[in-house]
Length: 596
Image (tube, helix red, strand yellow):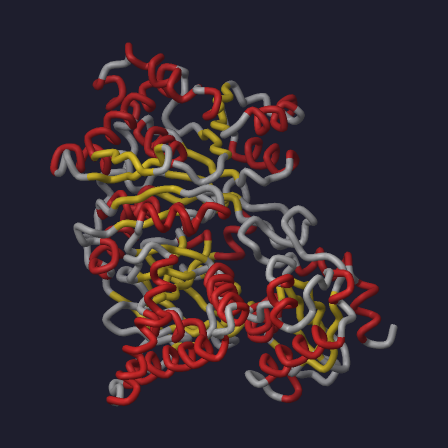
């Protein structure tokens, strides 16, 4: 199959905007709890009425401060309730919020605020304000800075008390679904980030259709989620809009160290994460089981979960397997679900391929991972797996209102309600990405007979060996990163005689792994050359190689002294590898793999 289209489930219209959503809930379901906000050791409920009133008050503050319709305002913060409140307040004032990762460098912040023409910026801390001070001289249009932790949002809301409802309504009178809702700057794996202009319709049309398609996940009265991914990323931003649209209760968690405690007290019914989070959950559970002398039980439980999921997908689970699965549900699976709060039924995974083993494992323990696919330019999801018919190893069929086509060279092309219209101030990049009405994703994939999409690589990352073999590194890298010892890796071999890899160690997992393998106290520095560690890594490489042909397999690997991180400049804020930077900084190590 070369093309799959899914008709929209909601009527097409240009009327309305994101600003209408809070007021609709206040009118129709005033007492519905939309948010849980951290309050000491528990969570404070925020009703639809409370939220809409807070949105209006803050929006009036922005209007009073001189933020005019169509003007851009930056938001630089960790994931917290105030971000969502600010988003909807700016939309209600007719303005355009521009998200900025709170880990961004001063140069990145300056570029985003300058290119977007931001007239103001909402910052989380005084530390962010100090960093901004160093570049503010180059931002002549930036007239306002508000600091969340400094109480500026409360003061701003109070300052708008003289702004009446008619004035606020007038501010957004000309805003509809065709108006720009936000400008999200791509994480920039290559070159300077591009500003993706997404409209109110991109978000609303996609959210409305997604609610209809995934109603049992986000549309039930019990539906709730704990949002912990950065709201500067389009994936989390869309889920924010989706939850408010659907009326699903949402809470925010900014600290990964308290995430398990937050899960336990908040008890979400669905979560969203990137594959690395699910890999960590699995590897940590396995390591703790081994440390407690229950490694063999965990291994059998994992194999049973996977076998049960595979049989379930095939349509028939035998009696013996059902019995084993029920036993392990009491011994193992229930404890794993309890670690995620005890009520999680679904998880949405995006950002990178999950891997079939993990997909089947989590489904087998009672947490169905709905793997999806999307980009900043598509307001996040283009495709997603469905609870009614899950195909582990794929990213599902197109969402309603979307069409996916596979070009002759394998590239994934997209049309749909969620596809952006233009890059900010960059017509050349726009015309390069959108051709003949199709957005060219740059990813390589294939559609099966049911129209389910499988991602096989990234067009610009395809390696061509000296022997002329085309190799997609993602297949190997994703499998390698699933090993508890591996943090990051890059597969190399372009114009080389064979494929090789550079690996980095997961220093968080190393101590427990080392203790479980009789190497207690092993340091990362010594681990790089330890025979037991290298043998385990070779086993991981062998496993990755089993997924590809001999010509595509990794022949040699090296373990680097330091990890690839966002701080080192080798990862984007969404944890994507900056291949050009890694290849530049580790050119000597790559050369050494091929004998210098």
